[in-house]
Length: 209
Ligand code: UDP
Ligand code: MG
Image 1 (cartoon, protein in one colour):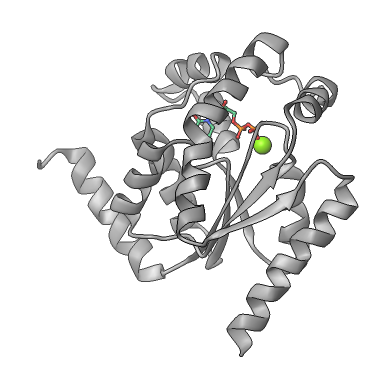
Image 2: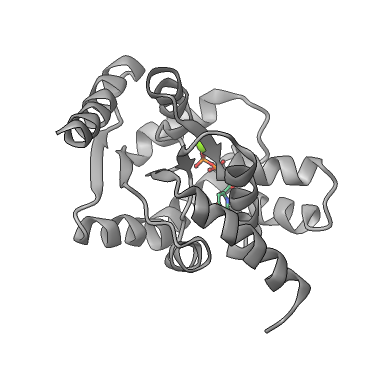
């Protein structure tokens, strides 16, 4: 259909496809350490970190017309409609000079995954999956005190449920394609990063071979 939004999307796709960026999806439950480890990867391996949650929170702050809807969904631990998140991700990729990206906290369900692939034609190089127990994730979320509206016990429980029901199937999908690099994320930050480094070094060695 020829809506203005479709046209804008097509335009964005064109440049994204031309760019052929390397994309790594970083997945794991809330509090599994995605953001922390992405910051380490940026430092050591020169990727650009795009947190879907941060992009959505920035969208709320910017006073966008979707702001209230996004805010309500985050408060309930629900997944924001794909088109909103994908548009933010596309824009961020397009505006950035880098050609390698860590996409953190997305795709969160099958629909996110399929829509991103359909719209951007990008397939992830691999999926970095941070595996962590709920007890440990809950402890971290309640302890992190970043003033996030969704870091309270009621929303945390909802986010865990959404993760199990909607996000884990995405990990399983990529597992069936041999694309998942699973990390034991219940350990201290430095130890987890050692395991992460091994994954990225293996990738670079494969590329050089
Ligand atoms: N969210 C979403 N789609 C995304 C990423 C995030 O709808 O692709 C929303 C969702 O409500 C989620 C919240 O943003 O619960 C926080 O996500 P974030 O990734 O920041 O949390 P984390 O998992 O890192 O604690
Ligand atoms: Mg995060």
